Amino acid sequence: MLCDICKKRTATLHFTEIINEQINEIHLCEECAKEKGVDEIPIKPSFSLADLFAGLLETEKPFAPTEKEVILKCKNCGLTYSGFKEGGKLGCSQCYETFKENLFPLLRRIHGSTQHTGKTPLKVEGKLKYLNQIKRLRQELNRVVMEEEFEKAAEIRDKIKELEKKSR
Picture 1 (cartoon, rainbow, N blue to C red):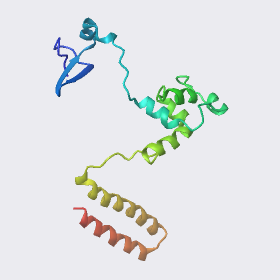
Picture 2 (cartoon, rainbow, N blue to C red):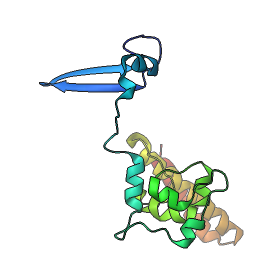
Picture 3 (cartoon, helix red, strand yellow):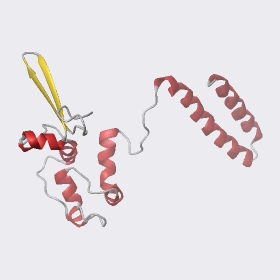
Picture 4 (cartoon, helix red, strand yellow):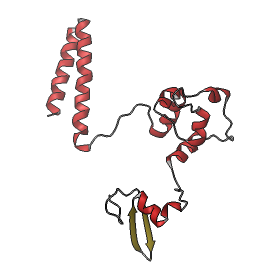
């Protein structure tokens, strides 16, 4: 979106004003905002992800970093785990690996899992379910063939064929 004033640069500041149910929006680039003095207004969002993470890390007792948390420090950016708990932001991509042990419980609490699964469009969700089952059954089929359990292999083969028909 371009700046409403200069119509040249990308707008990075977006303001919405609602007066008597009339909505007025203005979108400004940094330079035009500086010229108009808008960049000097102290604006602090009422909600931020940093605040959310910091809140999720809080316990009932006041913040007092454990000795292990004070020592735990990212070798790349120097952020300590206690610094992350205070600010709610990681310093770099290496922090994920450094603080992995401490982040897993947090991620599990927020997302319900530590494994990213993404979202599947509803149109293909059923088909993907069948394809994943087929993939798992093929792996099982290879295993039972290697163990020379041919009767079980025939059952698995038939299940695969049935699922392949359903997935079309």
